[in-house]
Length: 252
Image 1: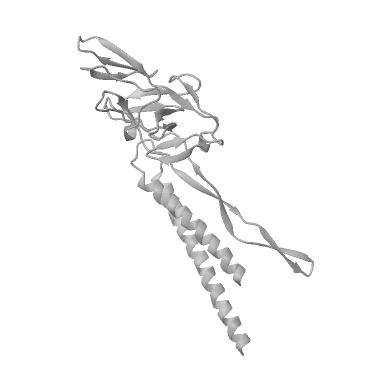
Image 2: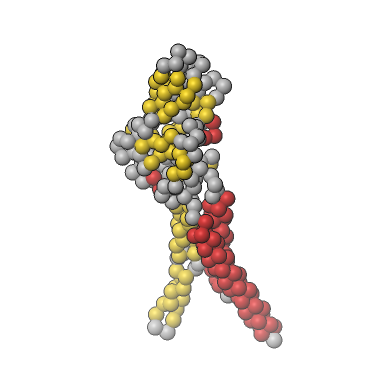
């Protein structure tokens, strides 16, 4: 009975994790560029018990193998805002992290800091950084990442280019928070390229990529996890009651 308790407890733990992942997906339903996640479970080791015709293998519960990112693209929404930028196709914006290093994001929320530097979502600087000239107006970004503004003389001024990165296995990227992902051994090293080159997508100014979370699917996953949790909890209760009966019999 003790093994039944441990097995059911592992199932409850896994379904709690599934609920946590689903809750995070739903909470980010309106986060631009957010990519949902899904847990993947695996069965644990099997124990052998002697039987009349050889050993009988019994499972010891469930464990989590990974929480995998769903990197399918979200819908590109036409906002008409010049400070909204979306990637149509594969690739990520490269951003400098405060503590050093480079992160990657799909959230193309542009802005300008007090020193005239172009920033992306979370106030992070693009890599390579871009500085706008004094007195600029009319920010424009073309599909190949060329950033231009209108100078004080009314002429177009080229500021630089936004560079994208892509990975052999983007599902291996590690979530940092603030919509930023980090490269890992599983993702492989980044391949930096201009938009439209080396398999990266083109940029679309005035568009915003929505979250790729499917609310209907997440609700189904939540209900499934809840029902599985309830069944494992019932198993714990049944094992406890059986142990109580056995104890009463032993006490005579």
